[in-house]
Image (cartoon, rainbow, N blue to C red; front, side, top):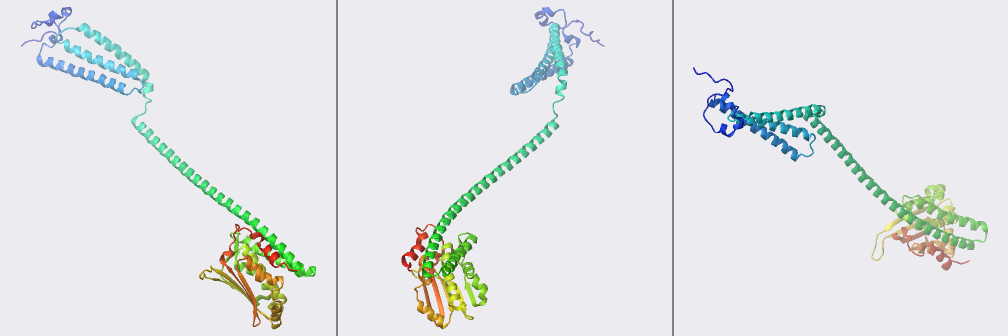
Length: 414
């Protein structure tokens, strides 16, 4: 039985040129002699070292590639030490393959020394970085932090959405309020112009009524009663309009009932008022109130309300457009009077200011017509005017002095 050669002891081996080339290392024997040059053992030894060398060479390349692509990474020096340490370890395994045939043990020793120094430096740096490295979040912690960050971002986005919605709502509200303010300013301007128009018109009408009432009465007491009555008629009409929802018109029925309220409360069922709802502007309300006041005053002095019997019917209705005629309003006063009163009305004719107010002034101001007649002990007064005359139009030029001109120019008789 053959005995194996002593470990690393120099023995006979086939002649090679390696010893001749490496004369500096001739005093050493190749590591293969320690393996008795058994093929399978040499292959196992060399193959393992080769595989380790290839792996240890590839790992530093991967680490250096990461450093090159991620310049933002911290502790780059530690990664470089690891790459050098692994590369030197791989180099020692490569030299182990060479020493199987060439005994370059001194060179291998120097490489191992360098590997040891780099390994020691790596260990020292690593231990110094342990407190820092253990603070690096774990993947689960990073995932949780990412989830928290996502939730926070979602909350911020929701807040921003609410802020945008609030901004949109605020802008819409400001725009709406601005539009309302513009409408209010426009309405105020219209109301101001209308107030000026009404005041001028009222002053002109009151002045003319005062002059004509004074001319028609010889005593001061009669003048004051007549004038105040007519003045109250104007004031009541204006008050009704200003109390309306639009402050520019009022229901005609309310105007009529307010003007006739004293006689309605006194004579009750003897006076009948009926008509469909129609809006009347301030100008129309004032003129119709003047006419009703004149009719009611005459009735209490000479007509149905001056006796124990006798009834009054006040009605109004709309007439549809017919040919060239636009829609019209017909206001009718029917009053039962005695024969003596009928003769008095017939004899009086239209000479008094009251008669002229009913048949001339009021219909002219309202751009309509009127008639008053007595037939079969019934006094009938009918006022016909276009529906457009019921609407206020503060832009009509000259309206403020119209009634005054009519009274003073055409009926200013002593």
